[in-house]
Image (cartoon, rainbow, N blue to C red):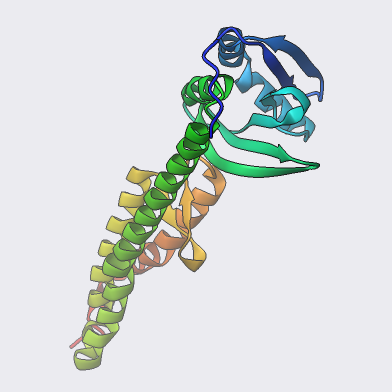
Length: 243
């Protein structure tokens, strides 16, 4: 049965790991823990940690003897810092992870800290797990949508172009131009959405991997652009051989 602690002034041990491996540690209550977490310079510390090649800045709060530990490590930055959050419990001499998820925004940390301070560990574990499952479902939906788009606007038109040229070989380049236009429509949609399909059907997000995102956008667009460039420079080759 979950232990419930209603005294929000209860002091637990709070630690901040800085980019330079310096540790800031204190016993603080719920309100102060939330305020210090929100005011911590996560953006600056993350940039410094990346330049130093050190561990990501982290906040952790624990009960005595680490019976329960909740920590959040900043791992990315878009509009606000995003965290890998982990809830751990000590059973005997062993510590095990009971819930974990990444991509947690800074604005979500106060809610998780409140549950932890109030001893609502079942609710905390369920909240972390529920959000993790929701994120996994969203990722699978996005991956499925991108695969369908690639199949419909890139792979299928490419195959159809060669199937068409089997019956009308002189119009191969015309058919490939149609494929190229559809493929570039797919690429433009990926740029608009900030996500593109990479090898093995995986999804690459612009906010997380800018270089990788533009590499795969170029990879998808290169062959269609090459075909349209040849058609534009040598229009007589659209029907080959000419009459």
